[in-house]
Length: 361
Ligand SMILES: Cc1cc2nc3c(=O)[nH]c(=O)nc-3n(C[C@H](O)[C@H](O)[C@H](O)COP(=O)(O)OP(=O)(O)OC[C@H]3O[C@@H](n4cnc5c(N)ncnc54)[C@H](O)[C@@H]3O)c2cc1C
Image (cartoon, rainbow, N blue to C red; front, side):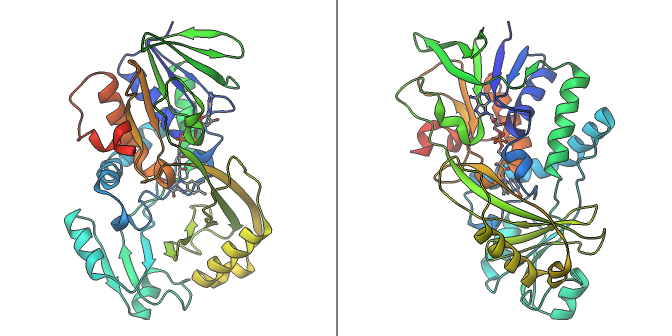
């Protein structure tokens, strides 16, 4: 039997299980659908929180650590699996009038950021920018990852390294005896283990092991994808919560909505209109591009946007690694490192208190 069962095969579960396996732990990852088929596939892959200056330090600590990990991690995955996660130096231009506190915030975190209000300079940064992109913060070092390819690379790594996992295998119950985790029950069988990690994204509140709850709710985000040409648009541009992300092959994503309406992944024409209008304002050439697809994903939302990375308050051996909300990709690599430190009882690389259960309430 495995030492540790990971419940959920999104980016968070995949990174956690892979890292534990590389540390010599016998793992088993259980996923109710296909690996990486939910939020981790649906997201935008920006390797920065949007408006990071509004976030708690607890989020930025993880983001900064992850930014340093991704170049090496994506290269390792490429060498190992042949799948390119397309980590790109897109840079991020955020339309805003306020800049003083942002520049100070960026200095504190040693992040390159400059205020640009000169249209000619903006067009040097992104020639396709529209008239509404007239002033804002330019952060040239922000990267993006093509998240569907990233989860594909992680999946391939599981196959190459024979990391045990089961797809189409929903965990129905986490079993604890005398406040200690002992097993998980699926529709097919019961797996015993001393350690269980809940990494079930937006579904992480489903397990009622004790009265202490895991407060994660689904927050739907819709996206639209256009078929452009490579190099037509180069930068990520963000304004009023809407953004465009140009991919390496020319496709352009326009995102995203924030909808708290439960476990609903339907797409709507109202969301399409909202996203399309905003995208065309940011990058007018999008008006003439064919729309390829619209989709929705369910972000694992927490009240403060800070994830759970902790042992359960009441149950020994039960860990929670969930609630990364809008930032599961950017936080994921560092978050997995921290979760592994906690599970293996090592000195954690950063202060763990902000990610505990009691910090959420
Ligand atoms: C539109 C949109 C845009 C986004 N943009 C960005 C971005 O630019 N940058 C960024 O960093 N983040 C972004 N995000 C957020 C990011 O995608 C999420 O935070 C991240 O994917 C969460 O990963 P996860 O593994 O926790 O969840 P998921 O990827 O949802 O994985 C959870 C997995 O658990 C499985 N599961 C659930 N219940 C069970 C069960 N009972 N048994 C077994 N398996 C179970 C699910 O099937 C699922 O595969 C975006 C999200 C959306 C929707």
